[in-house]
Image (cartoon, rainbow, N blue to C red; front, side, top):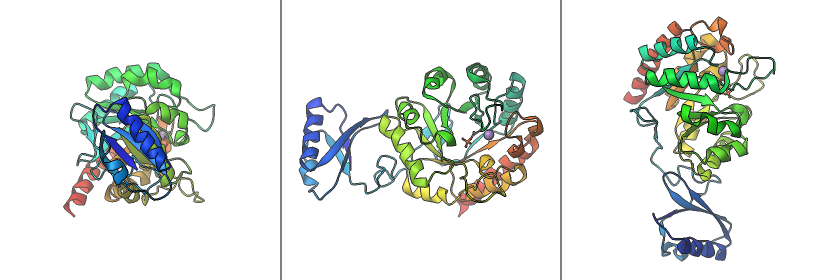
Length: 336
Ligand code: PEP
Ligand code: MN
């Protein structure tokens, strides 16, 4: 169960709730986020909710049968909207577009991508400065200096930044320069990282694990939320299956399922999802029709020269065409 607490609840009142929970064999965990204050009660067995209902300091009690609680739609029917400031939002009724290279490579490259995004009305730029690579000999990113340079250029153009954080020690050094921390597919179940991201007040986008289930993605989000951060976005980026014809299998089934199970926004990454440039647009459009709140895709001026993931990266012409089609498809979806 989720017990919503009143603002300014006293320590005494909190203790009294814990005692009442203990009396019905429930363990209470206190969660304080930027937005709310809760006690999550976990336990087995029947009890009469009236035992708790008239306790002072409680504003509401929600019985949530899902094993994850705070990210469940069973207690919060209204969708979570992510507000990045300056009118840039995710899941407030529009389609959020995030585009940019796999890796941040140079000042010149950043400028070119920013010009491309501005010309096409895209407000959020993706890019990696810390790159998780399968081989240690591949390009591993420009690091924090690359992020600082990117930040200056992006801010001047009114562009927000989404970039991957790979380890706990990077959270603080990145803090002033990111709008959305991305948790990569290889880190979805790095619970230390998730715990620490719960302590900050910036948005976090969690990618689905390479072999992760929908439920595991929701549990990962629950870690961040229960750590204190409600600003969460879920990202379907394809899973590893027996199929070798594509890099991953983009599981668009997950989109309506996640939307039904959780109040959090769902973004789809067709670039990593299929991994083949010429098929990325088709999967991006399909993702919009599946109900996604946003699309994140890779673009680069000359994909053949990209330091990473060039094979799945759109050039600017392809990207501009896709952005138009995405917006048209979103309008079509809204007309149903
Ligand atoms: C990326 O976004 O470039 C990336 C490495 O993604 P993923 O974690 O989904 O593989
Ligand atoms: Mn990539």
